[in-house]
Amino acid sequence: MKLLLSEKEVQKKVEALAGKISQDFLGKEILLVGVLKGAFIFMADLARQMTIPVKMDFVRLASYGTGIRSSGKVKFTKDLETPLRGQNVIVVEDIIDTGITLKHLSQCLKARRPRSLKVVALLDKPGRREVNFHADYVGFRIDDHFVVGYGLDCAEEYRNLRGIYVLK
Ligand code: PRP
Image (cartoon, rainbow, N blue to C red; front, side, top):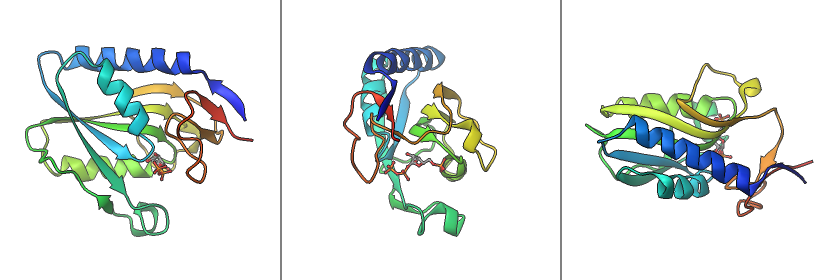
């Protein structure tokens, strides 16, 4: 395992992202929507760095095989508990790879008529994109490495690491 982003680098970036989002939504309230499981640590840190009021909710999507890639539709294994109409929604993701998850999730959530919908992703692998998707806020653009830590797993291991590592 090789360190890609240290705990300090990650925390600095999370602080900067929270600052930017808080500024962009000054005077408003936002609903953070975390995509389980990977985003839970990023979301916990991001939420605590925000300087405007935030509410939080989570979705979990069916994984490969029963999910979006095979069905072309978003299948929730856990849907939101909050109605989105009139809300300023920020979807919180740990990583964008092919873009399929976020493209479909964004379309699905937009259909619920939020006031606004933006996406923040800590990591982005633009080289792996299969569909056209751009996040509104991106922490780090990285090469096509298999990364773990800070919420990201390999067979459910390593999510609790404080930094982000390339698994060899
Ligand atoms: C990862 C990540 C995104 C998705 C990105 O989740 O958290 O949700 O894959 O991939 P894509 O851009 O190719 O659609 P994963 O399915 O590994 O589940 P997890 O968050 O529970 O680990």
